[in-house]
Each structure stands twice: as C-alpha cells, then as structure tokens.
Length: 226
Image (cartoon, rainbow, N blue to C red; front, side, top):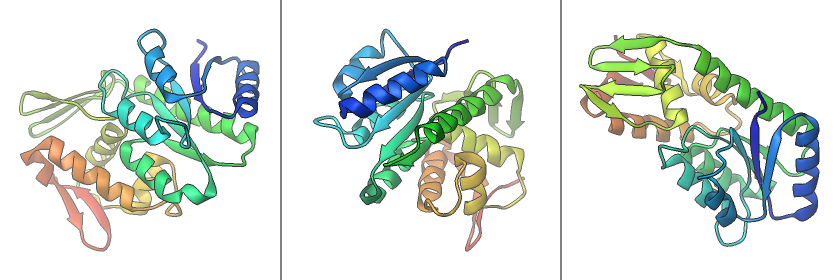
C-alpha cells in the first residue's frame, strides 16, 4: 500500500524538493503552499502524514495542527512539524496541540524521510495490535481506536489515546515524564516535559471521574492506579 503524504510548505524550492524525494520513495504526495488549500483538500484526500511548516502565511502551522487535532475525522493523522531553531515555543505549543514529531531547519531530507517512516510504522503497529483493554469503567478497543468510559464514547486525539494505552498497560507502575516522552512521543527530555503534563491534564478532564485513577507522583511522574 502506498502511503499518502501532504506537504504544507510555502517555500517553492523546498516544497518541490520534498515532493520529488518522497515520490522517489514510493509515497503519494500532494503539496500545498498554504494552510487554506490543504484544509480544503481533506474532504477528498486524507493523508497518513502531514509535513507541516509552522511559519505559513495567514493560517499558521499551529492553526492547522489545532484544526486537525480538534476534528474526530482527522485527529489520527500524524503531524511532523518543520521549525526554525528560533521557534522553540511554537514547537512546544505544537506538541501540546498533538503534533507527533518535528525537524529543525535546515535538515537532511533523508532524516525527514526516515522520521516519516517511523511515524508510519508506529501507526501500523497500533493498528495491528488488535486488543481490548478493560479496567473498571474504562474499555479501550485499540484496533478501533475507541474508548468507552462508563458506557459513553470518549473522543481522544491519537496522542491522548497512545498515552492512556501506555499508562493502562503499566498500571500500578510509575512512569517518569522522560519515560513517557520516550515511549509515547519518541523523544528525550531535551524536548520538554511540560507537554506531558498538558496531555495528562486534558486526558483526566476527558475521562471525568475515572481520570482520578491517573495519579501524580510528585517529583517523579505519573501512575495509573491499580
């Protein structure tokens, strides 16, 4: 199966270069110079991965990320951000909105392709992991990306789903923020642990009362109570 890649980049030379290289790797590529045209295309063409420049005219990369992750039809699309070194705060916000990875300009096209392949492999592993995880009022169907809490369907972003699944599978064991960044986000602590705290807060809110089962271990990390 050929994976679909959307590239949202307003620098023509870079956009063309990325399109050429990804097509040579066998991907189906659609490139856009602005966020508006990309969003308009989603009804006809839903990509597996979006390579998203944060610094775009009018509709910024953060706006696009927010739009995707707030829509249940698109929140499982993997997002890889392209950022400049000076955009660290935007990168942090991007992670808090649900972005999956980032590459800092200037970058190696080969590295970018490898990172996209890693994202796709993670997604394939998740889809092939057909199982039902149940604990108390929580029922998680991994294959269907479905979460039922107290009989109600709860909508989670792809990252929130991964985070809850990780905590449930390790219930009773403390997971440090660094461990969560590495296992769920695929990052070291060089990125930031703030994004972990933000996602935990949102996850608790969406779970309602059962969210209290996610315990904060002060100075260490988090644990799903057993």
